[in-house]
Length: 283
Ligand SMILES: NC(=O)c1ccc[n+]([C@@H]2O[C@H](COP(=O)([O-])OP(=O)(O)OC[C@H]3O[C@@H](n4cnc5c(N)ncnc54)[C@H](OP(=O)(O)O)[C@@H]3O)[C@@H](O)[C@H]2O)c1
Image (tube, rainbow, N blue to C red; front, top):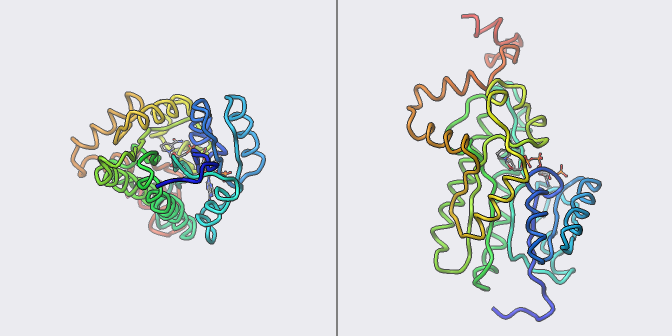
């Protein structure tokens, strides 16, 4: 595919205003390609754009809610207006919720599917044909170690990350030989606002597990993508968790995760409105 000579290849990072996405944008900026930063919070986006410029990169910020309306079309319009094409897409926008599925708000749980699965798939499938036609670039998708097992008390989040890993690994294989790379990153806990926002940091599991820095994960993710890796599992504890999920039967693993992701003061899943420890947990 011949591109108009004044179209510039860009790295597009969705979920670039905070956390891992912001750190990946900073690493990508050192390559000298323009970086498009997408998120909802204008102040946080502006700060991320400053990071990118300090690395010598050209930053473009787009305030966009990925689950509202025609977000992908709006992103495409923004790129076209600025004379850019998406060479690399980084899907880092995502959220999770801890708690029993029967006690968490339905809309918030469906929102996880809308963002972590639907928006990620829409963006990936929208930009892939252009990448394939150019024979370069690719997609870096943020899954999680949660992708390796079902996750009682974070059920929708774990399932969404299984989707991301399955989808990404399948596309990696499909696109072999095209010059386009799909890399899936599956970190364990990372010290970002995600842990507070999801409520995960209040569960015993996340108190035990060490937390990686977003900078470390970003470097591993970007280097893995550049080396055309299918899967990047940053850090020893995430590799151990992946191994445990492969070796330990669900009959043992699921009660263990359920226990480690529940606080005894959480609302009981039976719907009594009582604390778990004073209801089904006391039986
Ligand atoms: N932190 C961890 O422990 C961990 C571990 C494994 C995997 N992950 C995965 O890594 C990815 C990044 O997580 P993080 O830790 O960096 O989370 P974070 O610090 O909470 O950042 C999430 C990013 O997603 C953006 N975002 C959220 N909803 C959006 C929406 N509707 N439209 C547009 N942007 C939206 C946020 O931007 P605004 O706030 O500006 O909207 C923010 O930039 C997620 O997919 C997460 O599941 C995280």
